[in-house]
Length: 576
Image (cartoon, rainbow, N blue to C red):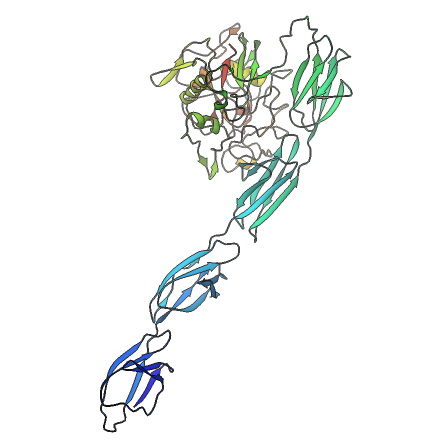
């Protein structure tokens, strides 16, 4: 008997005993029925019962073995991925490969991309073509360093933290990274990362300098800047463009301290006229920063995240000044009539707008939202998309945390004043807001949040700039503040009175109901708090959506009864 196989070299078993490898010839096999089996690696076993006739008959048997493997065609986008099975490399995509029947896990790897595991179930004798595998780019870890350290970093307009810092970037597309620090010129880099898993970007910030001219009386007084005694007490000083504390002292006189933020290319002026200790303190003494009372039964550390003692506030008033705008002022609207106002009670006003992080201590689930993939919801961004009522409820919550009697109480769908002379937290009266924005720290009534005319000459606040061109209809052409939406509340220098964002970032709810005829009554208005009722509340201050002269003026009066993505608030309260 002769035995052959396709393919050759199959192991031949007769009745369970091996005869050898095909082809086999001239085998002597006894007559009768026998079990013939052919086995070859990676082929299905061939098995058949044969009938040997005997009596010298020469018989032929052929084993036709079928594959026990299939073909798999692997394609990736992009091509060039290494394909491994069980840690063994089997090819590069696009790849056609034979695999044994059954389930397989193929690992696809390519530099710069996340690994991908492809599971296939191979059937013998068939070709399997899985869908094209699109590899996802692996983010690059970018380490950011600055000299000096501690620079604030914004990534594509969103605040990320301070250097040194690590952020993840998608490969192959440009990202805008901005470094800023008080007293230094900001640096903006457009970064496109390529191959490699870890990269580094280091920058050196250049000091931004401004000039401050100081005049001190009496002549024997000593001058201290940021606590350091100066060799001279008057004249010109070149300082970094950040907030500085300047103090004049003299024996027998009351020390006087003022805050100043120099600006590049501008000269600021400080005048100290020290009062003798037996003389009364001048009513025009500079505002002082205070914190809420520490006698509260509620632990003060639980009030705010920033200071540990509650919102930073500035004491203002009493004061008499002119609200509104002259009819000759460009951009003026009919609801801005000039009128005299007197504020008789000292009050405190928040240094910055209430942030998302602060508001979420009151209402954990609040989210300010997104626009075009950019966030309004960062912890240090001002809270927005809240109603006047929710802003007032936050004030009541803050009062309770500080052991103060709430200023408001619930009545129907709104809140009303419990005690108009109480010192609980509240929204600022419109007159208080106007005084802080237009008068404090200025030698003349301010028209814009910045010094000078329109448009602003230097980067001083968050308005509708070039980066917001695709979001808002009107921008300040040629102005770039780096934030297409709202910015963290301390991203820009304080104004002359020590406040952040009284112009720009977000507009702010005031306590008062809105009336278009504010100031229509002749004579001086004392401690105005607005109409007793109304359908809308007053809004003051421009926002990141505003780029026109009218809205950017500090005398502009808006109104609303709905939450907005560009509308937030800051808190106020009477001193006692």
